[in-house]
Length: 404
Image (cartoon, rainbow, N blue to C red; front, side, top):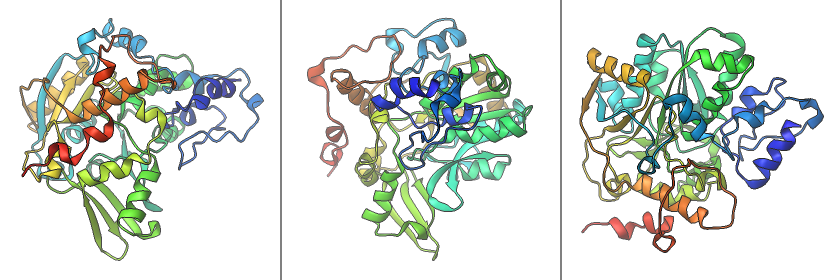
């Protein structure tokens, strides 16, 4: 029954986020996501579900349940002025003071620093991070990190979808009392918050043991096809030769770097890959209404408001993160990092243009003005003039930003 409802409410409307939450919670382990299109493989009898409806209850695809989660976390929902950044109790710029963390990062190592600190301050045993498939180095894969080296190695943004939350299943089954931190995107945070408010064994486990959530801002993620198009189409490489891929390697804002088994390295400027990735996006990501979920303990975005411009014009920019603290636990962890000397912090404001946010806003507004189904957003209204909506192609047109 539950799978039938999930199909009707989410899958038939192309609203699956590919987050892997349904695969995580299925009691009989019937659900698995196709690794290429990130859709649940429905090769079983729906009658097997009985009266179970967990997969539908945790799914953020059609209804992220933002208002309900905010009431539980903050005792209120966001105001209109908080529509796109969410409720927060503090904001600051930040970067890691550790050279290894800073150099491994895409934007200063703030997220990695918080994850490392959670092990000391919150007793975290495992950190869910985005790594690579050991059998296919081009493919993203959720990795449960148990040591500092793996957490640092999995720093940087990854612009590829994978059934990420499904990787928590092993911890639920075999490490029931261990504490967990998760770094993810808006859909991952929404799914975890939906799970934590339910009743039952796996919900109790998630509520008691997933103790820290940190999210990175997301304009939209990409199916594996986007990465395949770059590797095969732009770089002319065979997938089976790829040992590793980094989307923002080197000095800020970073380049896409593909390492192959023969020791060669192949790169593209960051601004060049954005248009290539567009061909691999699904409807749910393109129409998403959340740059940040606003439901994590801490949210982080690039300090630079326009990394496309920085990449296009080779602008030198000191990388750092803009941090929005949302919960007392998040503030306590940020304070701990400051006290330990592992993170620099300084005041910032959040006003002005941010290309990532503008891409999200304009895309969402274009879908809201259209006829296709979209995921439910926060109840806080987004007031806009449909005549002023810009296409994504216009927002990342090199002619718009090229200097000289």
